[in-house]
Amino acid sequence: QVQLVESGGGWVQPGGSLKLSCAASGSIFSINAMGWYRQAPGKQRELLASITSGGSTNYADSVKGRFTIARDNAKNTVYLQMNSLKPEDTAVYYCFQVAAVKDQVYTGQGTQVTVSS
Image (cartoon, rainbow, N blue to C red; front, side):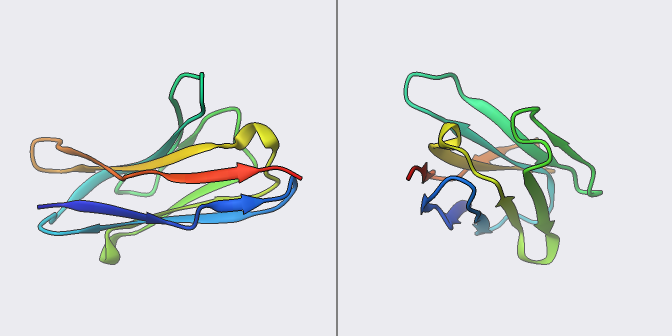
């Protein structure tokens, strides 16, 4: 059974930085896309960033230039470096990984990011 384990969330002051990690465990042999989305209370889920197996990236306009997604294929891990954080970035952040077999989507349990002074 595949599980995605997230880490790196927490509290940070505006302008600060955090780095999220999401590691897959279990029998997942080949992964296509990886990415991150977030859900804030009372707001729609927002896709933030994705990265293909070849390293091509896409970002939401709201985080472009501030967030950077990266992946380590050997470790089945995806990262999200978040800089210049704003209070409106406060949300639960979720990672996802799309397996090459049947495009199965796996999602992490979520990690809280709070940006406040």
